[in-house]
Amino acid sequence: MSAFVFPARTTSAEIELGTVLQPKFGPDGLIPCITTDETTNEVLMFAFMNAESLALTLKTGKASYWSRSRNKLWVKGEESGNAQLVRELRVDCDQDVILLKVQNVGGAACHNGYKSCFYRKLAAGAAAEAPDSLKLELIGRPVFDPATVYKKK
Image 1 (cartoon, rainbow, N blue to C red):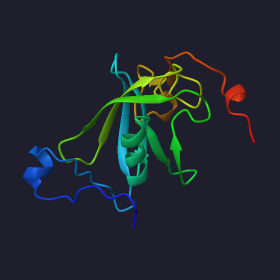
Image 2: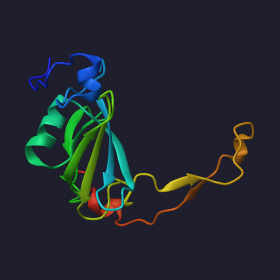
Image 3: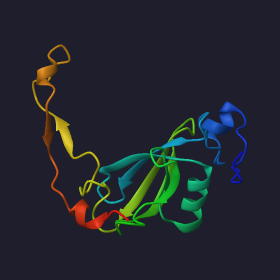
Image 4: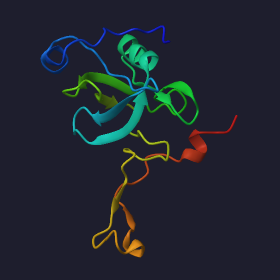
């Protein structure tokens, strides 16, 4: 059980229309988080939070997440310098998704060096019944070179 406890979820009316943060963490202890640029509203990334990373985000004002692949907490920008300063935190109607509006310090949110993790789009003419047509097009430009930023320790 997490040492970071948020208010217990109560009635549907209070969860959906009330004024108390009652986040719904999944069975795995995680809640999805969408992060956008505070100025442009561009979606920068999608990640998960657990109670600890949400509490740290609230305490520090720096976006912090739970890495499922590394099985650890990470503060965005701790290695790359591309931090996210939280300007607003929203929840959806069921309080089972978090939306962060951030100042994207350093100009990049993606570990591949792009401003947004969503730097590709599905090409025109793609059709599910024609797998060879499912091509992705780059729509972003790298902001930094990951090979120089993320040096193996």
